Image (cartoon, rainbow, N blue to C red; front, side):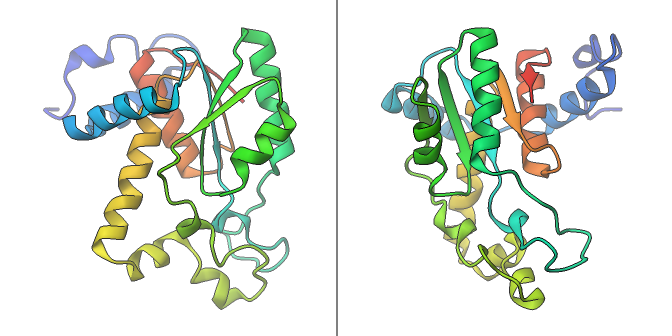
Length: 211
C-alpha cells in the first residue's frame, strides 16, 4: 500500500482503458530516472531540434526478428518491416497534423529508410545511441543456438559494465522523449514497445493515439 500514493489512482479506474491506465501508473511510479539523465534528455532535444509536437515510433529489429520458421521456440516472433511502420506513421501524421517523428530502434538503418519512405516528414533520433550492439549478429540467423546467443539478455550478460550502463541509459533517454509524443507506433508484442507506451500514458495522464 505504501508503494503508490492514492492520489495517483484518481483516474485509473474510469473508462474503457482503465486497466491500461492502471498498469501505466504503476510503471510510471517505478520509473524514476535521475535528474542528470533528465537534463541530458532536455539537451538532446535542443541539439537535434525536436519540435514540441511529434510522433514516436519504436522499431524492434534485433533479436525479435529471428528467421521465420527457424525454431518453434515461444520467444520467436515475426516483426514488421519498415514500410509497415511508415504506413502507420503517415496515417497518424495525416490525421493529427504532425510531421515530425522520433525513432527509438535497434536497427541502424531504420532512420534513413523511414526518411526515404516519408519524405514529407522530419525524422529524429538519438544519434549518440549505439544500435549496432543490439542488432549485430541477428539478421539471417537460422541456427537455434546461434540465434539464442544473439538474444539481448545474453549480449548484455557478456558485455562490460560500461556497455550495459550505456545501453540502459539509451533506453531511458528514448523512454523520456517518447513519453511526450503526440501519437505512438509500435509492435506491442514487444515488451519495450509496451513499456514506452505505458510511460507516455503515465506522463501525459491520457492514452495517446497509438497503432
